Length: 400
Image (cartoon, rainbow, N blue to C red):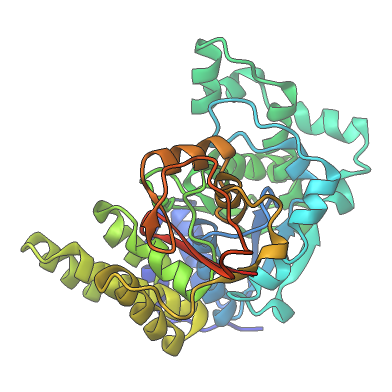
């Protein structure tokens, strides 16, 4: 199979959102050669939802897929148990097999929103790692030294701070590298925090007399609170979010993240992004730019019509201070506890302490009335409908 791609397209692909790549000349030659490449991307199901940050490499893969390259998607159902320490300043807990299976329930369905899944080679790394012999593991481990591991930034910092580093965490880059050997990867993509793991893949391949894969690392998308987008921090915009929810979340990002979202979460050309940059520098209200950004992102996952509806929802909710007619609705029988703090915790995925604090701070309304009584209860004999608002972003209707 011969692949013909315009050199300018390749250069744009190599620049957009890319922080590092090896080997530059070899990769460029491979992309221009017309040869179909085996492009590896691995994702551990550490959460049941995929957020926009995790979607960034999938969109890069989609472009390569459209060119004709073979995408090899590795679902880390085994590596998820070990835990990747790449972005962690403390030990990541091991996931149970039951939690991993739950997280995987609709993983492929979510990825199908971006990739043509029928053309993807999907592999689960438990296929070869679950029965990995100790001899093989020892052989792979011998490729690396403890000194190399401790040179890794987060391990180095934890070591200096006398923070525990388990031997299990040292194993992660080794076996992720072995994945590259099994699937004979030509190129692997990953987030900027994956550089060490991707380099490990090159070393393990070289040990097994394979041509080391080229690697590309990508910028990390910040969450709504300005930190790295993470399911565990609750600052994510998920590709499974409804159009309305996605729109509202994008509108809540920090102003300094706007241009990065255009670059990493949309396919708007650089020349247009530059125009937005110039307008912001000249003093344009960031809210106006965010409107365009939110429309672009929502349209990518839900279509243009739904994006326009979501804009109307947002403006009705936040500009006119009215309650939209199509707010998310649940039935009272679905509530585990009808006390307001418990309802907030359930429907908005908060802890009980967080929900109590939100009430005490005056940030919760019930039927447009501020409630500060932590133990306020919903009485469905008195009212068959409750509209609950937490701050400006979260609103839900509960029906008896």
